[in-house]
Length: 297
Ligand code: NAD
Image (tube, rainbow, N blue to C red; front, side):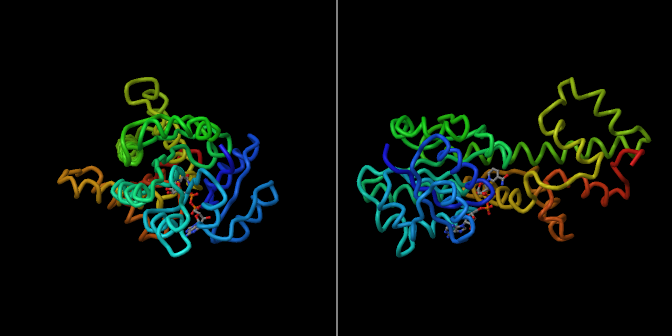
């Protein structure tokens, strides 16, 4: 494979692109924020003047942008990917966006003879830096076969099904994580209100069926009031919005997601949208006039 284009150099895109450089790949990069581009150029990447310029100079283009409107803009604007894409070229969108938008953009790219995969990730900044992200891939399996080795430089990729299926897997992931964290906060609130130290309950139950990565990561945060992100509330609200949009289109009733969305919106209304999603603990503290913090703190 020749040069790789990388568009979107934020918290996640920057370390992902750096891992490709470290593996010896030649990159052409673009972001609306100059300082992000400069950092990658210092690390050995070439600067692309626009998404079209990046597309013209590469055979594979990776995007890592905030949400559906940003990806649509980068693909469809006047000097966007679509204006320069060549037959046979591959676009891999690793942003977390609405699956319906992945399908729409894939249709536009295929009409020009190009290919698209959706490949959102789970794992956050730390795993992006370590190159250990979970990558969920949708699209044609033979196209996945062509880029698998490159995706696996950023983490561990898993093929799911046709275009949009990677995004569906990501939405399932965000559904489970959000509901799980709310369940941890609700359970620990019961312990506290009943006069039993939540941390003692945590130690008693973590090895049983209720044990989970969410419990392991988020319960200690609640006991310490440690809510620096991690994964921000505002990103989880964005993902649950995509869950609800997709659920509505399918006439699927998702009452638990609706509840957790309300909790997160309430936290955002209180100015906590930049905190880790473990701050659902704060929501329960306010709701019940309790503190989940260790009694020693
Ligand atoms: P971010 O906001 O830090 O980075 C997004 C980057 O895109 C920024 O550098 C921004 O300048 C750039 N950008 C925005 N619009 C652009 C445009 N029109 N043209 C070019 N560049 C543009 O976001 P992030 O945390 O890196 O997340 C990226 C995606 O990964 C999101 O969809 C997010 O939900 C997902 N994700 C994030 C995490 C996490 O822990 N941060 C974990 C898993 C998945």
